[in-house]
Every structure is written in C-alpha cells, then in structure tokens.
Image 1: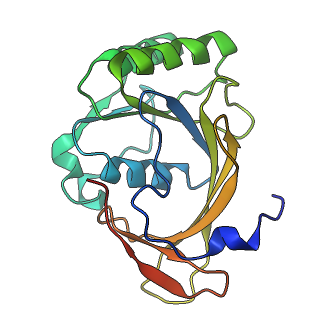
Image 2 (image 1 turned 120 degrees about the horizontal axis):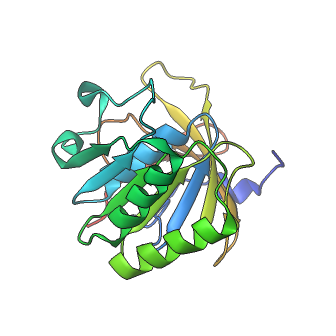
Length: 202
C-alpha cells in the first residue's frame, strides 16, 4: 500500500468521519473488512441486514457484536451466488432498512454493480459489500482497504482503514482505535497518541 499524507492521521472528532453515503453501495476489502462492517452497523441506527453465502463457516456470534446490534440484525443465508445477489438487491430496495451488508464469493460484474446502485438509490439504503482483494466492481461508490494494526496499549484495538476509491472525493487513510462495543471511536495520530472520543452520529 502506498504512503498516504501524514495529515490523514491527525485526530478528529467529527461524527461524519468514516461515514458511508446513503443511497449508495460501497465496498470493503482486506482482512479487517468484517470489523469495518460491524463498525458501520454500530453507527447506522435501525434495521441491519447481513447476507452470507449459505455454506459460510464463520458467522456472527451475538455476544461479540456491538451494543444493541443483535436486536436490529437480520441474517440471510440464500443458496447460491445468484440468490445472494438477488437477496442483496431486494434488501437494498426494502426501505426503511438502514444498512445492508453482503459477502459474495465471486467478483461483481459491472452490470451487477450498477443494479445494486439503482436498488440502493430506490430504497435510499446504504449498502456495503465485503469483497476479496481485486474482486470489486467499478460501480462501487467507495472502496475501503481494511487491516488490523498492532496496538501499543493492551486495551486498545487499532484498525487501519484506507479509502482507496472514492467517486466523489479524495482518498485518505485513518488509524482508528475501536473496541467493537459501541459506535464511539478514537482517531490515532501519527505519533500513536489517542485523540478525543468521537460521538456517534445522530
């Protein structure tokens, strides 16, 4: 990954930091993509739908989810890739769902990506597709590279989240201290010092 500007790591407390635009479909890749998805789920009030392949071996455990998310979370396990994409598209159209997360196994075609964008726009729903590296769609509004980072403090969990594609802005990188329990998080400066906690949106 190429070096990004030093200023991208300065502490910030903006509630809009790391927000995903509504009515659009975004993508996340990297080993930390599920953590990024859980972070977004914690920040989106309302119903969250997560679409898994039917034979997925690693599912979400309620005890390890952010506060109040289990009560708002619906898990879908359609059979086959075609049904998974259909379920994702229908969920995006089904307002008032707040966030739809999906984990397809195959690369998204440009046609499929455009259909998902139209569905998200119709339902005014935010979509987040977790893709393997190199399997994203050109239709995605943004794409994030998500990795874990070693933390100096034993009680800190650091995430390295880079915005590597952005149709309506610049690319950036954030190092985030997030404990996985709530929507609150800290930005970490370039020297490794914590910033002030960022308030959840709303």
